[in-house]
Image (cartoon, rainbow, N blue to C red; front, side, top):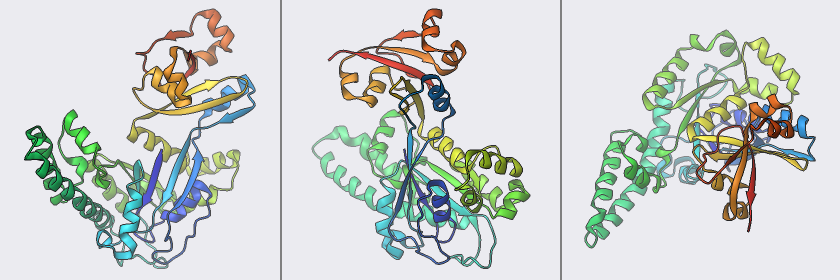
Length: 364
């Protein structure tokens, strides 16, 4: 999973990126501090792996990973090249989902590129630049399809839907708002559109505002309204607090979060939101050599899940021996689970579930 962190300059993108990845990206109080996108890969926290590692004592434990990309601050006119905008927009096309950082705090010492804090205006500024960039891509596709349509009338439904997408964006709405069925979804997914990507709005608080209570912040309440209307995720974070936690061990983090009255870190909550938005789950493999988590799309069938491990596993798939994580832990060991008859043998049509511990049998 690859998540791109975007927003206006000086809203806390690089501070949040540093906190999430410990990557040490440059962060300062002036626009365009980030010129080249920074990338950092982190392991997905998963307590199930820790428990399996205790059970199997493997040579190594491998977490699923997520890549964060810190993309430079966008400004008005980015789609026309303002602030190196075209270069930055191209980088957004490479990510699976967008984390849009929106500033929720007032601080005269930190310059706001628009002169003051206004989440609705800031969100609109970014969204419009993404829409303008998408319209250029879409118009080229419409022109190409119109030419092909003269010799192939079966392209008429596609052409009609492309015009619907264009009208949607001309109304200032993202491409993902275009009403569609399965065939239209396939057309939309074939287009490299920025505004078809899922969005998580990361509402960035100051330390004092975060401690005082997020629901007291009018900027956050406005972001929630916008996210609800867009069917997007919204996540309250304090980039500075996340940065303060970056060097703490797990026990110190838990104590720190408990004092704040927060159940989990921003990283944990972002990953959960990302998985939910993209329809992802994790299945597990376990043995003396390695305990590992694998990320797949929800609904993936056993042979394709096996193919995540190695293409030979999918090509020569025979069956999957599967047990739910909770059932394995309750049994105490895989041997005990097999004695109880709770390890299932599943065929090609089985859809792997989140938390399944799987062993794939294959023959090539």
